Every structure is written in structure tokens, then in C-alpha cells.
Image 1 (spheres, rainbow, N blue to C red):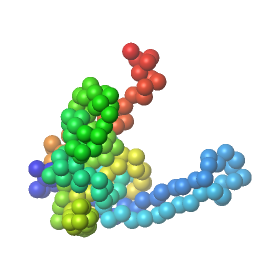
Image 2: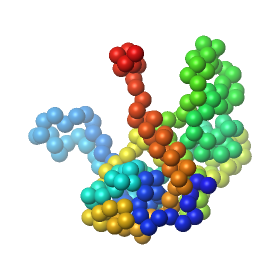
Image 3: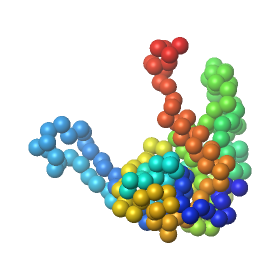
Image 4: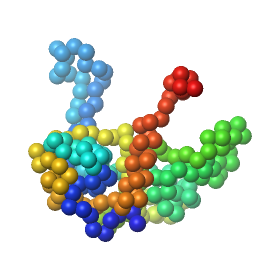
Length: 212
């Protein structure tokens, strides 16, 4: 079970919510001179149909919350049979050969195959987490090998997290609960917690030298 049949009367980490705007800022380069503050940037304001809470449950308070929009999944996932049978498999660790379609795995150089196999079980897409299909989500289609595939899977991208201030967010229980749409099951929330922790805890190679 990916979603709870009846959610708590509180906002939780991983909840699907609605009604929160998103502002994306784009700059041409760092603004190092305050005299140029009004130049070289754009603001893109949108209202995603649904967002996901990425603030830990116990930290949902003080009129601030961290969110990420639910977005459509990538077409390439459906070319991998392991993913196509259930896209939420992307949320879990897996053997290296499962991370690619069989034909793509077979075309890898032997050295690359061996390197990946030595790494053991891993995430295929560390920054992405898939949300299971639900009737609340608008369906959309992909053309895969000449066949139209309709899906209601959506995903979040850990690179696309933003903060929003809301006067009504006082605590998990004292928040605008009318904006809450879906709550993850304990198992799904645990998978989300594990994957986002892995994503942000990865150690770059240059730092590993000092840790060894």
C-alpha cells in the first residue's frame, strides 16, 4: 500500500498537498554588485496542481515549510521492463543490471559492467522519487514502441525543493489541513526518507580520499 486510506489530521512528511505557489529564480550570473540588483534575473511564478512536503514531520511549524512540485515521470522509464511493471520500483535499491533496459545493459563495456556490479545494490535515479498512480492525478500519455501508454504516475525531484512561508502553518496539527490530499503509508514514507537521505549524504570522490 502506497497511500493511507485515511490520513492523519496533521501534515506529514511526504504528504501530497495543493494550493501552494512555486517561484523559480533564474540568473545569468551571480549578482555581486548591489547596483545590478534589478538586472539579469527572471522570476517564474506558478501554482502546481500538487506539491509534496519535504519538511520532516516534527519540523512542520514556525510558518515555514519545504515543498517540491509533483511532475510528470520521464518517458525513458517505460523502456525498462523492471520499471514499466511498477514505476515505484525506482524508489528502491536494486541490482546494477536492473537499473537499465536489458539491451542497454548488454551494450555496456565489460569494464563498466564490472564496476557497477562491484558497487552492489544501488538506486537507479537517486534524485527522483515516484508517486503511485491515483485517481486525483491527471492522466497523460507516452508513445512507447508505437503504443500509447496512459499513466497517472508522478514524481518529485530532490533538486527542485523550495521554501514557502505560510501564516497558517503553526504545527503539523495546526495547519491548513484542507490543503492535504494524500498521505503516504508508513512504508512509502520510510522509502522516501531513505532515498532523500541517500541523495544528500553522498560523498564526492575527492572527499572520500580523506575519509579512507
